[in-house]
Image 1 (tube, one colour):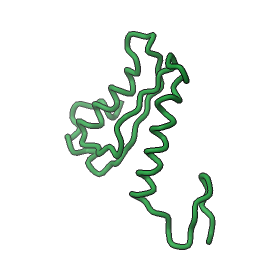
Image 2 (cartoon, helix red, strand yellow):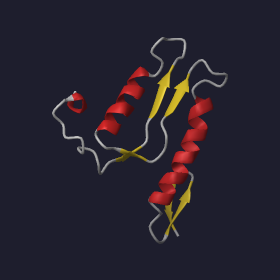
Image 3 (cartoon, one colour):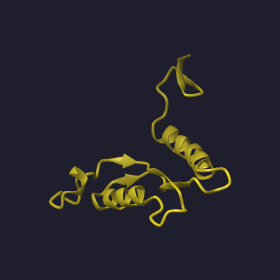
Length: 99
């Protein structure tokens, strides 16, 4: 509800960097409606998106993962570029390990 307040300044989220994915079923008229509405509102409030939104579709051949898996890989690459590991840390899977 807070994000939908009409009196929020247009620059309310100007320092926010975000990524957004939605899960839906294209068999429904309003496919990924909530995710698309949230994306539009965050843009109105000056959110900076680091990657284009992904809209997973349960009706696709591989389900929502057909869109979400490649999107997630791109997102992780972008995050690693924007936020490099601290010196002395290395990554193994999703874990940070001391060198």
